[in-house]
Length: 253
Image (cartoon, rainbow, N blue to C red; front, side):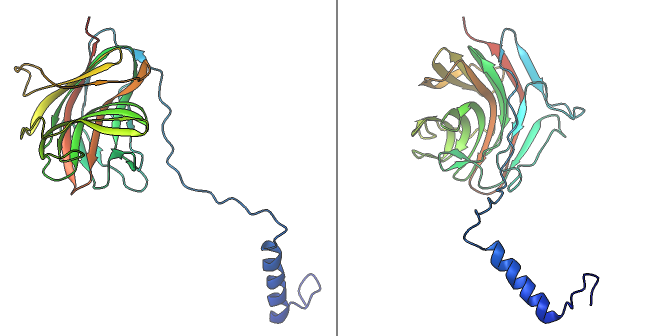
């Protein structure tokens, strides 16, 4: 006898267990929803209009991102992208499997909401050698509308070492510029995107003493407010990209 007055024999325990299982699996009960683990995306801060030059440096003393900027790694829990500022630059170690394509939206990015016309620049040290590896600038509305300007190797449309621009407008994903169109083996260069209304123009130069050269142009129906910043992609072997700074400037007059 136990405290309930029942003779709780092994045989009785088996019967009770069977009854509980039968009740739990009864077709008269509504099935319970299973929790699915999803990435908790950060809430974008309020957008800002660029009215004066703003420089973002990567200080080794800072433990927080500058105000308004966010590091977003969509697959951080399952395939994190290591990053650090130990050398005074943003060093990103890109694992394989990171991309921003209709079938793979896992590319890490460092972005800020901006409204109106603007210019955004960076200097990237990156030496891609396999298909596909790319790092550079991003203008992002959502997963269905964005513009990528990258120092890259390979990608849609062919080409090896060079610069490329990819754009997605809802169901339409296309290369605006491929490495075949603009080949280069530079392992370090400056990159810039300028927004003027619906027009986005990409430029590049070898260093700050060089002249900005146009890489390509894209006409969009993007809204006034977008997220702009850095992006890193890799579907080949692990590779490192280093971003020296970000500079925001007002739009061209």
